[in-house]
Structures are given as C-alpha cells and as structure tokens.
Image: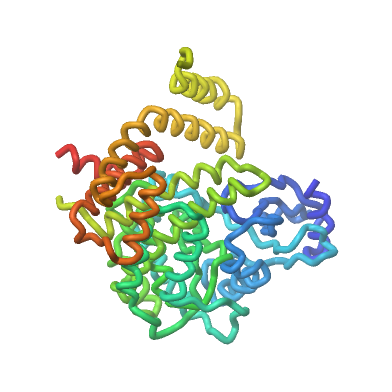
Length: 328
Length: 126
C-alpha cells in the first residue's frame, strides 16, 4: 500500500522518522489526489499531506499550473508570511509516488457548511471577509520575479476560453449564451496591473479554525492576470452555500472584503469585481458541464462527477439573477 | 403499458432503503458517496414526475418565441444561436420570461433546495 512508499520517501527528508501511519485519501479536491498521513518520530508524530497527480484527470490541462509550480507558490507564500503550509518535499521519480509534493498538515475545517453553521466558527465568520481581503492582497503583492512560469490571462482571453469550452460540450444553453454576450459587451479590457492570481480562492481551499483563516490551499489554477478575479470568484453564489445575502463566501460583505484588501496595501475595483463575479458564475457552470463530460467519457464512471453536471443549472439561475433580475 | 409499481415508486423505495438501512452502517468517503447516490435517485424521481409537463411548456414557449416548431434540442440550438448572434436579447419580448421559466423548471428537478431557486420561488408565490 501507499504507506510503504511513504515510509521510504519520508526517511529521505525527515531525519529520525521511523515510519508513517494513518494514510487516508481525503474526499475534498475533486481534481487532484490528496492524502493525509502522520510521520512517526520518537519525539512525536507530525501531520503531513501528500498531493499528487491523479493519473489522467484534473483541471483542463491548459489551465493547470502543474504540481511543481504549485509547490513553489505555496513555499513563496509561506515565506512571505501568508497562511500557507510549509512544503516539506517535492516528489522525485525514485519515490515511486507519482508527481507532486508533501506538505505540513494544517489542522482546521474546509467544509463550507460546517464553517457557515458551526457554533465554534461564529467568531471566525465575523472576521473572515476582512481577513480574506487582506490575504488576497498579500498574494497579489508577491513579487513577480520570484514566481514560477505561469500562464497569463485577461478578461478577453478568459471569455474566449469559456466560450470554446462551452461550445466543445455541444449542448445548447441559451442562458450561457446570454452571459457570454453580456461579458463581451461589458469587458473592461486589460487590467492596469497584472499580478499573481490564486485562481481558486474559495471554500474548500481555505482551512478555517475558530480563530479564522489558517491556510490557503490548492494553487492548481494559479496564473498571472487581473487581481480582481480572486475577489470576484469568492463572491460567486455557488460558494455562499445557502447564505445568499452574504456575498463573500456566505460569511461577509463586500465592504469588509475591500477594507481588508486595503489593509493589505491594495485597492479593490468594485466594478471589475462584479464583472469577475459574472465571469466566475459562468466559469463554474462550464466546469460543471466539464464534469459531466468527463463522467461520460472517462473510465471511472464517477457518480459524483455525474451529479456535479446537474449543478450547471444552479449557475444558470444565478446568471439570470445577475443579468436579468426580476422585480421585488 | 408498463406495470406497477411505477418507476417513481421504485426509485423512492431504493432511496429510502439506502438512507434508512445502509447509511447508518457506513462511514468516511463511502458515506459521502452514498449521500450522493441517494441524491441522484431522488433527482431521477423528480425528473420522472416533472419533466413531461416542464418540457411541454418549454416547447410551447419556444414555438412562440422562434415562430417554428421543432424538437426541444433543435429549438434550443436555434435559440442559443440567435442569442449568440445578438438577434435576441433581453429586450426581445418573452425572452427573459422564457429563460426564467425554463431555468426554474430545471432547478425544480436538479436542485430544489438551491438558495437562489428558493428565493425566486418565494417571489413567484407573492
């Protein structure tokens, strides 16, 4: 089993390690394989996470930054004092574990419903929007020169990619067409500045404790682009998990998010954030359709992917609420 | 004519069995997958109940909007194309209403607990 390979691998970078225990595949993160395990050591055990290529699937290959870039970004963020786990080891061929890396495990919750409903997170919920704003600003301020090679995106490029992906499904969705028209008609053009964009800054990729944000995970979709993309993406209704009137992840307001962003030394552009919210809503819809396609054509016939395909309609109602709202 | 019990009754019986008898015995990732399985069965049950009426109403609206008859898939392709070309937009009489009705009908099957759907349904009932 995987514990044998992990034991061998851990011995190579963790002096005194006597083995590993409790290796378990985590359910979160649909596009890459993530394992949790403990490194055993006479001084006590140390929680670790293995992140590795799943062998076949993942984000659309044109979008994925690659695991090596992901490891590098997490390390840069960690070194800059941002809430990001320490990268302990980048996998080598002789580890026989595939491609990927091992990082420190940050304890906390990533499941949105628990974060939004749990009594123990009440204090965190009150401060999270502001905190996320500040951390986003920190990510966007990471020096370009230190970053690994990343694709560069713009509003116009993103619209074209979404259109191409949607057309690839060959399934007519008049609401998506309406959204694509709207995006083209309202495209604000190139961003004044191009920065690192996390690309998937939302519930599921944020480790939350009772004290607030502890870690930002999953840099798989990181790229260079308009920093407002990250702020718009966290506002997509799909990440509010029922708390529909709290635009930031179902826990906070735009004002708090923007205030935190400013506290982090940057200024938000609310109009661009709104634009990216519409784009993000369509993007999640297209991703849902992509899951359906992988379900149909892939070998594993995953029921979860099939059911995510049926969530594309959620983004259609959200797009209508954004673009064709009905009177009160 | 197919015999009883109906497909709706059968899917409901299986979903009830999984929820009441199997779910308590399972934990971890498989418990999550079981919940997804139960959700899928319930979705199928809603589709069996609601799709016929919803599709008929959608076909009527599309025939009026496009001025031609056709299968639902063909009609949706034509509509999508007209929106893409800008021939139809939100100012086109009946378009917004059609998209809303069609989307609400999808949500009634796919995800009736979705927050936006519940919010919009409340608006309809007022």
